[in-house]
Amino acid sequence: MNSKNFFRFIIFVLLTALVFSLTACNTNQTANRSAKSSKTQNVQSKSTKANKAKSQKSQAKQPKANQAKSPGAKQSGKQTSHLYSTPPIKRKPLPMQISDKVTKTNGVQKATVIVHNNDIVVGLDTKGSNPTIVEENVRHQIKVNYPQYAVHVTSDQKLHAKIKKLNTKMNGAKPVKTLTKDIKTVIADIGKTVRAPFKK
Picture (cartoon, rainbow, N blue to C red):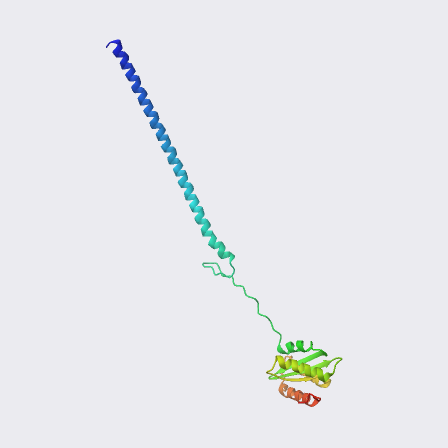
């Protein structure tokens, strides 16, 4: 082999080595890029899964929170429904209701009221006015509000004292055996004391 051929052979070997080295570098760079891209994709996929999981949890919590906030809503499972109701209104007994209205009438100082069967019996203490007019005003007022009852009103102090005693007995622990008879007697006495022009 002459010197020219040897020189050519050396150049060929060097060029071949250079081509192989460049090819290897490109292969390594491509592999590195693909590895980095796969890692990036894995990170993105993990973050996407985490975001989906968070959104699902938040959506699951929202209906529970809405159910907890809404009063009176029935909830399933171990949770109990919350029901709110207003307490019943306590009304006074009918005699007390009538007495409260009567005492607001002009000329009435005190009033004692008995309600028995279909009768309302009222005894009055009057002040500064004609007792007869006060009696009629009270009778008319009660009759308008309670038309289903027969109304008997008196300002006679003796009769009022009897009405007070009957009222005390009625509110006592023991029943009054002669109650109906006693009330009928008082009603008859009230009828006797009615003055003109209101006599009926």
